[in-house]
Image 1 (tube, rainbow, N blue to C red):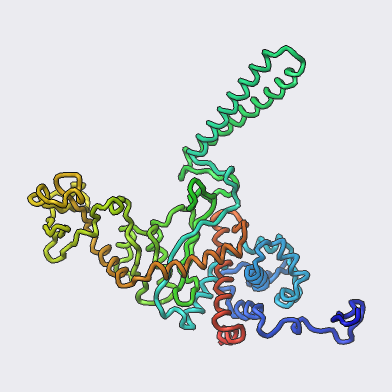
Image 2: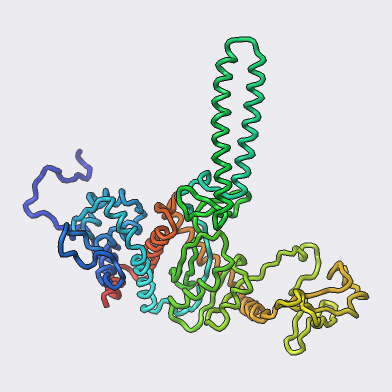
Length: 479
């Protein structure tokens, strides 16, 4: 073995064995995990077992279990069984826990029983970032992304899925019945074996048909018209691909545009973002502790009621308006082409005519007015590009002023949507890369929220280490 770097003889005894601390460098991220958790008051945060019981078998301290999980999520190890194996052979984890190696059941039970407290720890780290002055920009980007649950698509039923599968089973039964009829007309010994097999197939399909019909009844009476058999809280959600979807959860995140830290997050089983603008805006505003917060979001969040709910709260939403008419593609005028005059309460059309408010509201009793010009429209030369009717009518919501104010904010931020995209979508890409092909390992919304909080905490800690470095960050945590 000459001229090669040689290792030590594993059978050689050492008079003074090296300590575990010698194997963990001073700038190792595992030291940040210990410093952060040691500064927490786990009793106040609500961890079960923070105070030892007077009798019975001694338990592991919650700080030990929390260190194991945080180290695991920092290193893309989410499984309690893998954490058990790592605790017995990973030097960094031995250093972190003092050579303790809880079994996988104890580790899994800790995550299950302390979900609320773990989410509070994630919030505590955001408070630490806030105390360091990292949220001075007072601007966040909000988005939602679908994460796969522990529930196969075949184990989720909606009314459409149940009807489709029933139709497929009926077609299979008809096909086998036709094959059985052909076999009965043949005169040989071979068809007898085939007919027995076909009859078994038909019997199995009829049992499946009965099962699907029963499932269709359950779907009809379910509160959300869905039934998931593995994870009861998981929902079938549409994704960007045409004709595709997944059974999972909708993860919402508000990310600071300056340092890309997740300041607020939530896990839902609603497949859309239309009702999340105000809740995520308020959560982010509380997290950063500012008087005002600009919230950037995509068109999926456009909802007049949500924008109105943000009014007066300090949340300043910036969401592009959704145009679903398709008029612009055909060269027709759209609503932004009609300029509203607040002082005179009328719209000015592209031809220069004024559209005034009618006496009767569109819905007769609601909050939508219509503006029109009965005299100018019939003879207007631009009417073919404006409306197929005799008179153009422009609808205006009573609270349209809040939407106009939001559009003005967007006009002052021409790069807002590009900034939103490069801020929050990068975060979701990173989290999904860490989590792998099966993002969530636990079931039910409560446990999935705990898992997501651990992932967010690990993400924010890595970001802080990149921003400050390990040693300065430890000093700031202990200050």
